[in-house]
Length: 382
Ligand code: SAH
Image 1 (cartoon, helix red, strand yellow):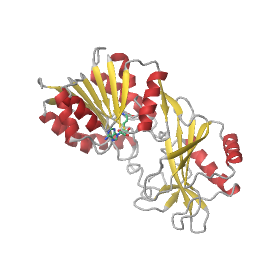
Image 2: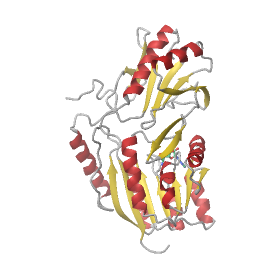
Image 3: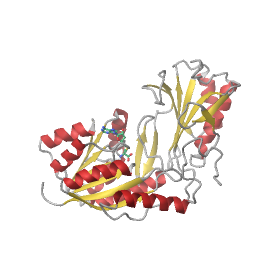
Image 4: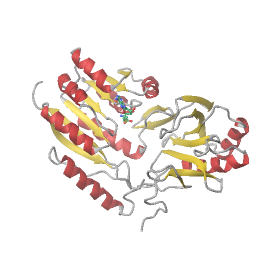
């Protein structure tokens, strides 16, 4: 029996009807079939407690047929909202905040946005909580910047949840699946939260990518850094670096870190994170990783180690080509999609790299998603 009443409707925890140990076996088998031709797949690293691990919760707001405000998740493949008050993988405090906001809307006479009629105001609530710091960010995503009763609303909300350290209003007046719009207004606090990973403190803005499972992230990064075999002398590229987490954690063991990331907010966070942690040997660039590395390779720049952590679609042939031209002795590939990883490994192995090992880390218990980190080394001089 599946423990969640929304099993199948939500589309989230596809593996929840399997005991956790079997979920891990299922993922391991899948990885062996996808990556087995390249290397040995080490045993997947699971969680001791695979529940309530998500530090980021996003709820859609809308109206039911009786025009009552509801909040929850979109039903798979549709835009109807399944009401959700608590979820076995989401942070409990974040879930509680979302329920309280929904109840407050009624008393403050604030309307949820109705996609059918285009009326109402609030579309989504995003909550991010720092696992170590306990800091909480609430992002209210609304169709307009006019927030009636803003002051009393925030007063009441922070009375109910004194753990909230910042509230941001994000304006999204476009149709489509993207939750956050490009305009933002900080209503309370700094507009970001901080959290720590492996002893460093990281600033996280509303639109920056941050790993959603902090317990497993520390394990993932520790393995990635160990695979890099750093001695303190290396020039290291951290491609698709987000807020700089991997590169900054590795900075102590390297000569110089260069991070490249497309999202400008994340790059700003990364620069602030370097400063805040007293890391002096890291620089960050806001650019498309393929474009940046192609230019660097063409200019004859080198790297000793390249970390790459692309999104689900994987990297590009041009990026991988430039990796080979820069000829690092090691590449550490962190992937959240083993299919695109296998495709990219096939290319890298053609270009003179050997996959030494791979270690899966279960970042997404109960879901089908698989995270894995691979170490590659250069077979011969490029
Ligand atoms: N290494 C980081 C982020 C990994 S997620 C961490 O562990 O937290 C993948 C990152 O790639 C995201 O931050 C996303 O904004 C970024 N990204 C997506 N497409 C990109 C591109 N074409 N060039 C550079 N970065 C890109």
